[in-house]
Image (cartoon, rainbow over all chains, first blue to last red; front, side, top):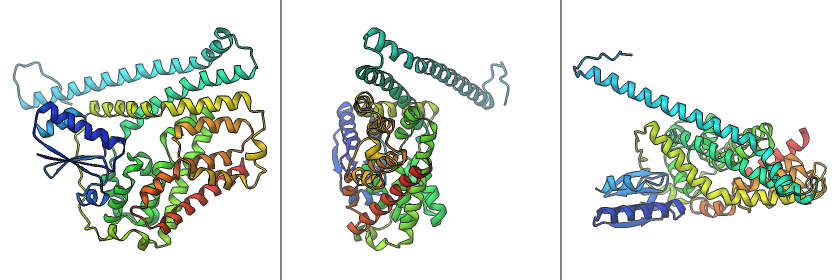
Length: 76
Length: 363
């Protein structure tokens, strides 16, 4: 499973990253987290508000920090 | 509405009407709890001023009319007052914002013509969730979707400038008139600067790679939010924002309290008063590179006003601090050529200076 966390690196983006890591650990799933911080790359994904979470090419949430339970639902 | 029949049959209709009733009961519960909380909030809020007097002059036994006394009372009254107002408003705005997303705002603005678009963009700038680090992806998204450049700027100016935290603090500390002036002039500056930038036809001053990017469909995630979810988001916003800004508020009020207690009356009149013609541009020039949270700047504004600074000058200072900042310029540099950033700062800065003079003249 490939999880992309998009955001330029502000506080909310880092929080999102931590949430995703925690969700993976809780579920015990093999997944690689890729941090996308380049604006050009973010724009190419069609994302206009950050932070955003993309799982296996599918955009799951934009413009807010997801809850851990939500992320667990997406990867579970 | 379908009445509930007490038959044992489990028809589809029956299930639906039951669901409606449950929803209504939930609604009622949410409504009653909200009213109760609001009532308690209001009662406590009303006690803050007498309590601060009691604390300062009876409990701490500081002499009435002394420098220390007025500073301590200012601090012990304003801190809880501002925190209470802040919590309430951030909660309400947090709920309102669940109805708006940047994606929907962009979709809505894409079809708008310039003038009407500037107005709508400025208004939407207030209610659409926005964080300054998402300014760049937002800019790219807007431009790609065919939102005119000027309309995009109206949004980018209004989003940080008309700030709900600043609004509530101005209301709480200086009254509704000042808050209204701030809201209306902030919106006008956003509309007009965006409109001017649109007229200047500066599309070529956007970085080339932005224009070369293939226009992609923005991804819109339709969320089915219940009221429970929305209330949750409101609570989250309180934890996020109030948890982050309380230090600024306390620091701001502490500075305000010192000015309130120790700076002589009319001290500010000679530097920031009405008759000092250069004070408005000077305040804006100082304010532009500065970056402070709106929550920290308003208590200082209150104290300055009290010591004879003119309202227009102080408002101009505050607006330039929160609307234009060095970190935002640096982040926007990724998508805008320096010339366009300069025009942006100049147009918005002039708007703020103009507003400052206007209020010094009429008030």
